Length: 262
Image 1 (cartoon, rainbow, N blue to C red):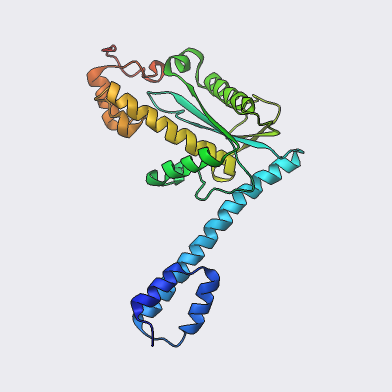
Image 2: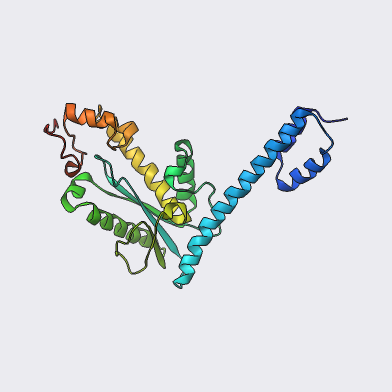
């Protein structure tokens, strides 16, 4: 008995590339519109899955090659989140991945859908050899400046990972040189090129977002649950109306003439 269109559609939805090739050959003479559409949908799905697998493999291969060039194999990826906000801490993630246990979906956190970040970050935390998120609080950013704050947090992240028992050969750092460690290798836009930097970006982003959501309850009215401390129109208006709160970076808020209400 011939299969119905819904039955064929279901088989195609479940098929891997090998099964699809068999199904496609068996359906070549089937001219039903629903079947032709289902075949094309399945083909596009498999092409997208193959492209994603190649992208992910490329991220792992890229950092393996960087490490091999420097005679090492154990890589820590570092990335920061929260350099630009008017409020809240700077967060720096540090991650040492298992090279033989790739994590699907790793990418620059800005390229990952918000609803997917949490699950991928959880996979990183569960499967990485070591990971950490280090913070620099607003008052310390005001006191030492952003460059020193970045150096402080990156250095602390390396130390914490090594304290977990992982000896690091290569330090991969997203962006421009900070000269914080002799093992440092800088990769411009590294969160989209290196798996461990992408992982660091994701765990730091998710962790910092949770911190800002908690602050939204402590200091309501600034919209921290949605703007995460960045200078959105609503956040700027709230500062002008309410003044600064204790988690604002005063060195970033010179436009605010009104004194703090806290």
